[in-house]
Image (cartoon, rainbow, N blue to C red; front, side, top):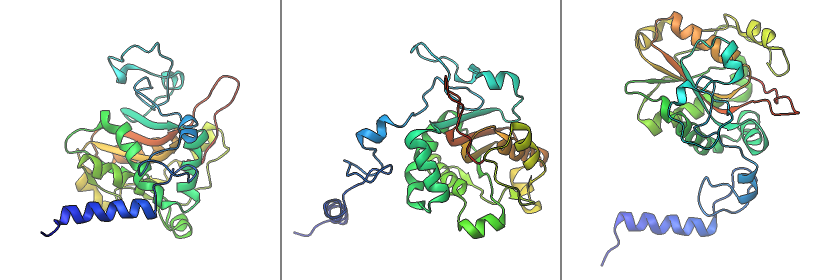
Amino acid sequence: MGISFTGLRAAMKATMGVVFPPQCPGCGAVVAEDGGLCAECWRDTEFIGPCACGRCGAPVPGDGAPVRDEAALLCDDCLVIDRPWRRGRAAVVYAGTGRRLALALKHGDRVDLAPVLGQWVGRAAAPLVRPGMLVVPVPVHPRRLMARKYNQAALLSAQVARMHGLRHMPGALIRTRHTPMQDHGSVGDRVGNVAGALAVPARSRACIEGRAILLVDDVMASGATLAAATAALREAGSGPVAVAVLARAVKTPGRAADEPEE
């Protein structure tokens, strides 16, 4: 009696699981399933739930009661900052294991993390998804792309598009000039640094015209880069823009927010 292809594949997967057991993406410890965090890294990761700012995704205080209207919740920053996008979500706080994983993907050549982290972003972005949306990553300048060899935002957005069955358009935005790293500047400096640095190329304008956009990046701090990207999309005739990021830098009592490069 022969074995089915499905059975053979399951047997091979089980064998591989014995020879190469799943590892925690945060520390490499053996875990029960692919993509799972070990107990220590789980405790060190602050996943952002539904009690979050509907505009930028930062966690906001709650009493544990169900959130009736997530979009109506706004953090202190978004009460005074005019965000050009409509809604936003983030998967984790940029601290602890979340910070380490974001940095490993961005600067550590850990492209193997993209499937897991992309799924985190995809789950966080679920309330933003609508039929016919285009998924667009924040681009990097060709000079930085040559040095890094990949765009971490595009790796995440590809996973998000696949997860929700949406069209992925990694070329919908381009960097028109190289900008310095945005890791320690003030909000004003960050805004000025990226002003006019992103654009929609002529070849992509017809595709995005009137279409809702899900804009994806790895980290949001001030939101300056996402604002510049949203402005470029809207100026090119896109429909409403929502944003989804892997990690959101936030302020906590007694400690300023980590200042990641945007």
